[in-house]
Image (cartoon, rainbow, N blue to C red):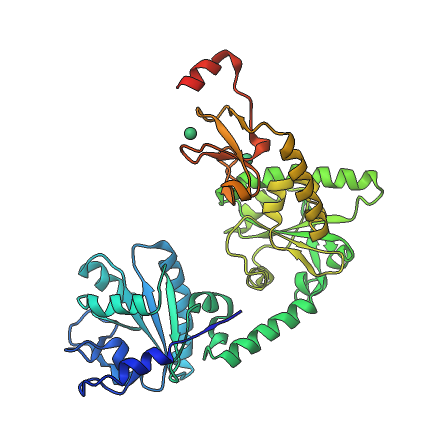
Length: 422
Ligand SMILES: [Zn+2]
Ligand SMILES: [Zn+2]
């Protein structure tokens, strides 16, 4: 992974210009305008100015963000925590907001929630130039600038992943973090994932019995991150339960009924919703509210729920995409290995050859066309079951309506005419 995008040359070109008014400072050339050599501090008062020259020698994050965008507000919470901790540790670090707010009032309200500096709202030109120079395509975006002129673009990802550990965001530091992470994953075992000082058990489905974590060693184990308040979870959980039973049953027929287990990792907000939600599931659970849950989410980089992570019999991660695989292949996805998936993909190709090129689906009035990755398809959300799909799909070429081939239901012949015409 190439983390570094060295803008040193560009900075040189800017700072070696022939105008004597341009400071030799890199931060000055990026952040000042011809009549402004300061940034705003976090209070709303007009005289709260901070000289750009104060940034010299610091690592500076350019934070492209807007108050109207929920992803920015979510990231702010994390970034503020990291910023405050770095500041209190005495780190040479600063953040400068480059706002995309729609008016001055929104901008002022927004920056008051943040403890760092900002470029004045009125200086559109500087904001535009920064967006262009750093190729900012979406927000939130955090560009980290080093005093030596190098820059890296994935500050948001790094802050989410490593928090304060990422500082000072140098190539060496990030390589060290990646090395540590690799080592952690290589030495991963089910026991070190699921136990916690002193606790070496999980709850059974009725929460009447403690099941030792070690009893899962050698099995394929799904870690199911989910919560009762989460609407997509409410849809996915019953499906997972039915598929879990089917996998268990088919394993039993082969004499290995114990080879598969799921562990519920709860994102519930309180013990009672945890208990009632777990009560609907036929599998084990980590105790509610344990630090292990946060650690697992960070370790596996869980960005949304429901999420199903599959651990193999050797204790290593098989896939983080268990949910997608369940949606695509149902119980056939088991044991979720690359070899199994290759086989399933081949089968799907063969099966698709037998499907009609076009067909009607009960849920849509236009004719649908069979598409694949190579013929206009690609990853999609099924309009019938609301789950992700990839590969083969039936698609309405006119309005983009798309469903899994298996979600296709024939049009009721009694009102077929009206559906087709309507
Ligand atoms: Zn579907
Ligand atoms: Zn249509």
